[in-house]
Amino acid sequence: MTALALVKSHYSHQLSSTAMAMCSSFCPQIPNQLRARPICPFPPKPLFTLSVNAFSSQTSNASAKADGLSARIGFLGLGIMGSPMAQNLIKAGCDVTVWNRTKSKCDPLISLGAKYKSSPQEVAVSCDVTFAMLADPESAVEVACGKHGAASGLSSGKGYVDVSTVDGATAKLISGHVRATGASFLEAPVSGSKKPAEDGQLIFLTAGDKSLYEMAAPLLDVMGKSRFYLGDVGNGAAMKLVVNMIMGSMMASFSEGLLLSEKVGLDPSVLVEIVSQGAISAPMYSTKGPSMIQSLYPTAFPLKHQQKDLRLALGLAESVSQPTPMAAAANELYKVAKSGGLSDQDFSAVIEALKAKLQNPAK
Image (cartoon, rainbow, N blue to C red; front, top):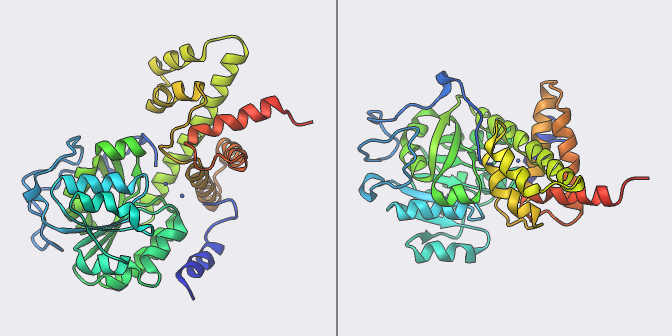
């Protein structure tokens, strides 16, 4: 049975047909007992060598001394998120080996000093810890567990960190394959989109092997501003889906507000300014609002991924019998936007679905 068939069969009894997963620009408050603590010094028996002076779990410093990050790092998946994340590791002086289905996407990183391998398996063989940033659960499983997948190159003492946005069932499936090799596994989906990835300002929502979390902490700090350790595998995926469910619903509501203000003769630019100064202020309103008013949607987080994350979040909610009517309504709106050819636009393009509905109301 292929890895893709394996995950599909695994889904059939784990998720409903409304379920599907990836990145956002904020994170909800986490109880203090779950917040990550500064990791220094390292445990006496590390999986691999990472020599550091000090790193804070809440640091906003995206740079690290090259001599403080001596592990051999693999990075699989060089899309909108993966490429800038890998670039930050290279710029920090890390020894990075990359792979991507489309080899040309590796070229800019190779020019910066990265090495290249022709398969995830070869990357895992040559590296101490391998990161993976894939677009969806199917891709995440195929790259980790498929033919010439990363798991085939893992062994005791190595680590695999999946920073993709997937559902809990997928995270556990990949974890099982990784741990069967003797390697350690950490899920670490990120909150943040293209710009935070470029600036090293991501938020990591991690779960899995605590020893790998501690050892990879300096690498996470290069790529992000904060990190949270949430316990068992599946918790990181669940937290990310909740975050992106909230974000998708917020964007849908914000879109309604922009269009309503314009319809009644108000200046939507003033609305953006008012909202950005009030209690409901969120960075994405002030960042995306001006472009939305001009019907411009430069892609930071593709709409198709937001809809995927809403589907997965709805599946998670159904699994615990939690009603989520707002998210369900938002999901339908994103589906309309996808059917209108907006899949690869930024998720803020969901406003176009509302324009269509207003201009062509159902009879």
